[in-house]
Amino acid sequence: MFALPSKKAKSKVHNIEPYYNWRNLYISSEDSGSPFFQKEYSELYYSDKIYDHYIHPQWDSFGSQTLFLKVIFAEYSEGYAIIEMIGEWNDCLYNDIMLLKRNLIEGMMDSGISKFIILGENVLNFHPSDDLYYEEWFEEVEDQDGWIALLNFRDHVLEDFQEANVDSYFVLGGKLNDLKWRTQTPMQLFSQVDDQVMKRLGPVL
Image (cartoon, rainbow, N blue to C red; front, side, top):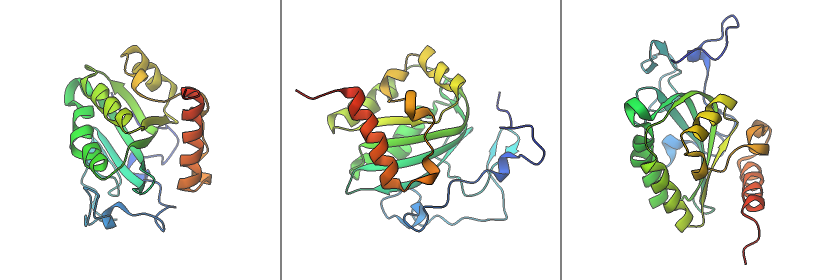
């Protein structure tokens, strides 16, 4: 069940905004290659909910009832995107991975994105189903020399990925689970993640 990220006073889901310090570099609603191109946002009207908790209106829906996201950076010439997520990842009830793959990822891949950095600090639970769409996504990025990296996911969520045997489709854990990404530029973050990926893959013979 979805729970508030903290019990501290005034810590509410609706106060959690997508990261906005890179907006001088990229805005998904101004990106003609984005599925959120020309979307208009309200700072006052809260409409989307995760269960009975309203979320900040700057988050984007990709069709899931419990998981929302924000593409906070995309660089088509370099082929990478940085996506921040919030909510409950529920493949069991809502097939969130299928919705993510079909409604967002495929369009980005058609535009040349093959390396995905997924920020998961605000993903509070994971409920698995089968691994069909994970395998499909992995094989497609691998064909383009790409990868999918999970950053700063909570330990219990990573454990759930591992128990569901879908962790092998991602680069995760180790240094990737405690990156201070907000202090970096998108290019610095991408370079750091790419370096970790290359170290794990080892030398190409």
